[in-house]
Image 1 (cartoon, rainbow, N blue to C red):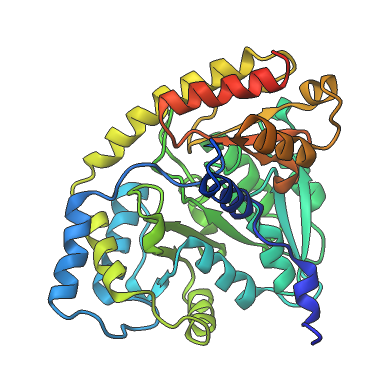
Image 2: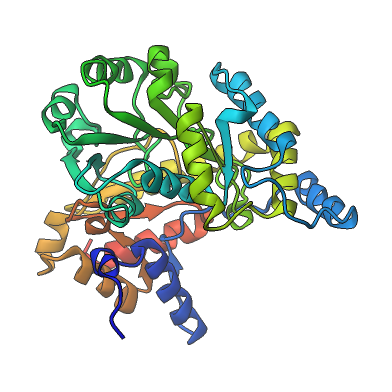
Length: 392
């Protein structure tokens, strides 16, 4: 059987693969501490779960509109107005099976063969393969640790060519937890104004997971004049501990959202009706859960950053948001005879019983991503194992 050529362009998600391998080892009875999972370790709040139960009992179990229920799209519009001072109508909003699904819809709807999409590295693992599956060409902009893992205006300007059609901006970032300030976004916006053919995909999925005091800002909040050139992506997975419910949303120009809807109509159709009811309850209900969750993440963040920086040869910048740290480990690896972060990740998993995601999965070899969406006890024990493995 000959498979389609597009399959050879991509690889399975490394983060999901690491999580699955760690789970398999646990099933064999091995003691594995996992820093791989990109999901909060909190339970979905009770009022959200009750909304889903009520939807089932009300027999809200049939197809909805492809783009999602009107009431949920109205709730999303209200969220954008309340939290981001952005005005959208329900016709400008698409509900999908997670923000990942929405981003995939965009690449399918917007990219043609040979089109370029700029992806700052380190990047979320799925961006490049989404572009490749759309017959586009990912263009990587390396953003090193000494620049806080953030792209400069000069780098952006140099990366844009006549073929550039799309720019991914993920702030707060997976894998680094870095965020662009309002002023930094304004500087990027000044470059983008010179290239009106470039659409911006603003991936805001970690908007509410804030570790510092600086308020969230995306590029559209910093540069309102880019409204007709920006699609904003978000969802309920991270903010409300609803990863398995699979509800994300996108807002943008009507023409782009309609094209994304048409793509979705031929793939999944509507997201699950029951999950949509739960997402509406999340957006419209009590928001205090977010502050409670963030308080725990801030303490965990402090512990893991201090512990990693105490290991010889490891450098770990504090994150500003999300629940990841991205540690530079090339010196520590070399001291132990490793020059491949994938091989080192295998060593940590099999010999030290710790699951991390190698930096090469995010386009930055010589690093490792650790999710601190786990307990303080496991964080301390897991980093202690890493320190022992590195001879620290």
